[in-house]
Length: 126
Length: 280
Image (tube, rainbow over all chains, first blue to last red; front, side, top):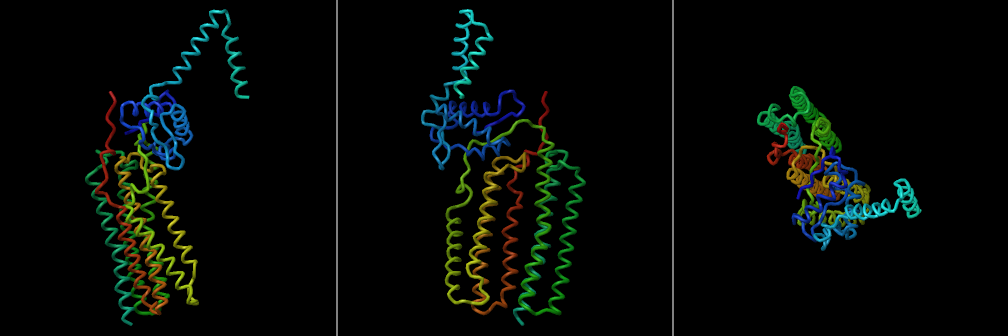
């Protein structure tokens, strides 16, 4: 199974990696339990920064598409096929879109929404 | 006296094998690549003007010719003057390092070449196989076992010889040196297995074959070096150290035979060096 990254594409590199690994799982090119290359190996092969591949792997692990088994390496999650269809980004966009639409309908201005959103995110980070 | 004559014969073989026969083989292989995969059809293989490659090949041939000439002069001087084991040892070893100089130049120029290839590459896409590479994909467990047994046998030999308290014996420093050599080889292997791809155009299958070849060369070299270390200690312990230069020279020739495996071209996919198709 081959991964092809376009460094001139407007889609971020880590997102290209995430989507291609998910596509490979869905098209059964890789199966649950299959091993994945280490972060260093994949980063060196694709001539990317280790952090880029690490970020892609972190997101895939969060989505339960892959799982890390300590020193043994990274593997495709047993439920990867079902989990690959879930797009958390799209879900966040839908939910936020609905909420913003409700605020606007109630007369809240865009700048008030932005300030409130910023404050909430800041509080969470603090 | 007969061991000196034997050494001269083996040393002559060292001169001719490493600086005449193998360089000629390498030159033939390079010439074959030039003729079969010309710059007009395989432009990615030649990031520099073609005349530069012709000149480099000429320089390689001339340097080796000079080394053969110097070796023959040294051999004549040895035959007419020195009859000493230490001198013969030093000559065989020193000359071997000189013989390795063109190989080193060849490797450095390859690395520079790959850097140039990366710089002139116009492709914006990068490819990788989604497959983990593991040590035993490249090294057979049997070969790794033989290398491990050789190392353990060497350590046991050192421990045994250490009891006799020979004045010339370096003791456990021998183990330290062999261990450091093996660690260095392990580092080189891991670098090839997980490190950055030097040749940007290399096909994945070629890379796998290359890593396998390098792994084999490193393991065979490790075994040969360990066996030679044990042999040289045994020769000294048995008080037949005057035979050491003969074995040393034979050992260097063995290393050259093993090392040449890394310069094979029969498994390379040259199609990757063809011109990119025009985008319409």
